[in-house]
Image 1 (cartoon, helix red, strand yellow):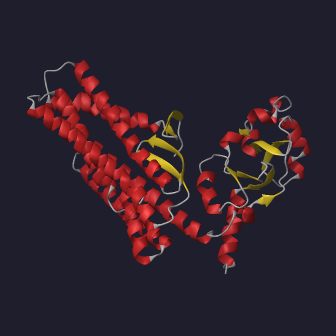
Image 2 (cartoon, rainbow, N blue to C red):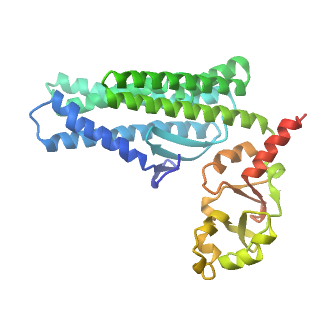
Image 3 (cartoon, helix red, strand yellow):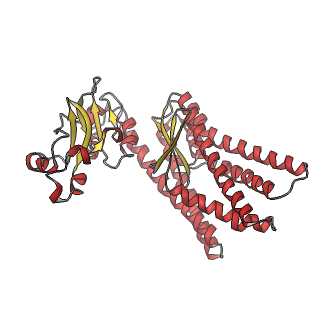
Length: 376
């Protein structure tokens, strides 16, 4: 899940927000301010309900951010690097680089998220109880009580033993510890995620037919997300097992055809495209990469502008490209490779000079080789 814009950098982690957050934010704020709160606490102004509903939505997403930050902090303490956090429609995603080295580390990284949500829920519940004990029983108490309930619900749901939920990671860690086989444990957790997703879809349609249209559709949507994500996780786990032990240098296409960033599109088409089998060309300056040009980016340039458009002006900039070293495990590169639309990575040596490129075709070829020729 990619971020639509960067929000902040917190405890050394870049936090981004996907546009889909706005949909859920508006849904939460509207359902509270126009539905639940007026029904439970009548005789307040529309402004009061609007402020309460919006405030609750903001605090809810701050709780989601705390949940994901806890994953990131514990992951770093267990030797993993964190590329960032993205908040989106179904909560948040902490993008970790690599995998936990032990079942214990896997358990700690996964378990801290639901624990933080539970503590937030208990904390809000305690505040609401103290306010009630002090004689308060109005809109503010109701809003805080809602935050308590939603955080506890989030903790419970995330603890269900099914990937990609945190509970699925906990299940994976437990099975990994029991059998000593991380691949089998991850595949089993992913299959549990597909089962849970199918049950939620069925329950959602049942509620929809029973008259609860919105909640039914929401459950079905969550179920569909779980099924899709769990399926991708199982496929990714099997792919990682196939490519285990293979390094970027074993997969990359060495000595790629490079071009100057100062060439125009017409020069590239006339001098390189028909003479090369490649569909992507790294841009280099003094042997160091500065960007990447692909056929899709060239197609976006109108024919009448090709002679006046420089490659550097339309290329994918270096900061948006995954950069790898030849000794890096290919499995560490794959998650970064999938995050970028151009789908390619540049390989550099210790001095930062370009020595290769990794494309989807290179990955497919490596998988076929690893399948046909088992490694010792």
